[in-house]
Structure formats: C-alpha cells, structure tokens
Image (cartoon, rainbow, N blue to C red; front, side, top):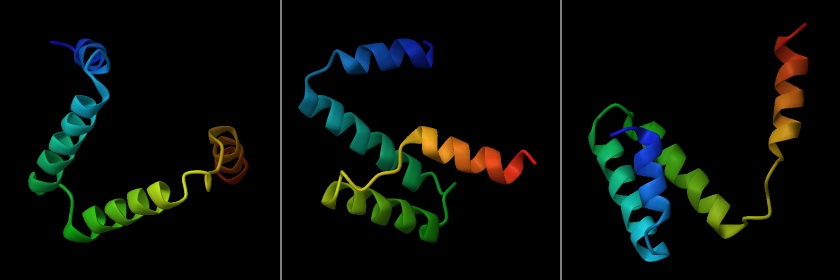
Length: 73
C-alpha cells in the first residue's frame, strides 16, 4: 500500500482517530532509536511551543526566501 493511499484513508478517519494515529506513529518513531533522545526532546518541545501559541509561525514562503537568499548565492 502506498503512503498516499494510507494518507487518504487516514484523512477519512474521525479526528480523534487521526490524532491517535499520529500519536502512535510518533511513539513508534521515537522508540525506533533513529532519533537521539535530544532530538526527540527538541521536537517534543517545539511541538509543545506550537500548541501553546499556534499563531507564532513563519510562513513557508518566508522560510523558502530566506533559505534561497542564504544558499543560492
């Protein structure tokens, strides 16, 4: 099954089940040991920060422009 098919099926789930799926996937990633504990902690902290203030974001277009300016010299 392709990731696009899985994503389409996940989007069809009720919101509570989508959240549970995300949590389960995240827990699997963390337990896979492919992330260091520091990396997992950093991601968890950034996710918490986002939930605490979801309006404190930088638009993707701005991020892309800054990266282009820095690395496409």
